[in-house]
Image 1 (cartoon, rainbow, N blue to C red):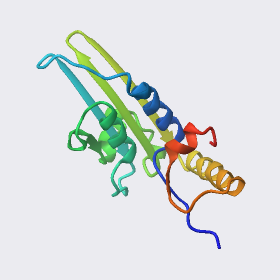
Image 2: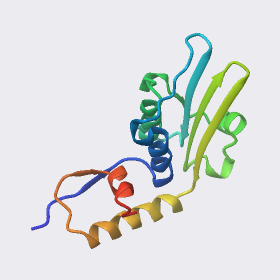
Image 3: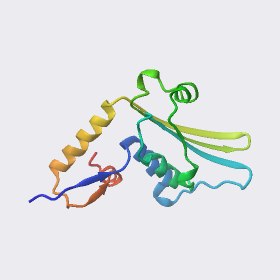
Length: 150
């Protein structure tokens, strides 16, 4: 009898970005109190009610609390402020990291539009599960990426 395998985590691209931010925990974002600001913004379709896992992982990697994440679900704001195409308001994922340090700043974004990236990712995960004898336990998508399975 085959046990259940559970996959938890973020998309492959975002997972790889998070892994690079951590750099095996040798890298840490340091700021000067009162002079620097780190912000994580995320946006998904308005129907999303679950915790934004990718944004939480990004915040954790940057030393921010999940409560500091800016979540955007308003369609007008998604279009005007984040540049989400109106065609994709019903299925998108947007994540932005901004680090401001006085006159200098850096910003990184991930954007996913439509269903096809999700379907492709699920297809890769299913293929991996079918090709390997996995233990019946919860797996993080990070483990799949780290092992080169997806």
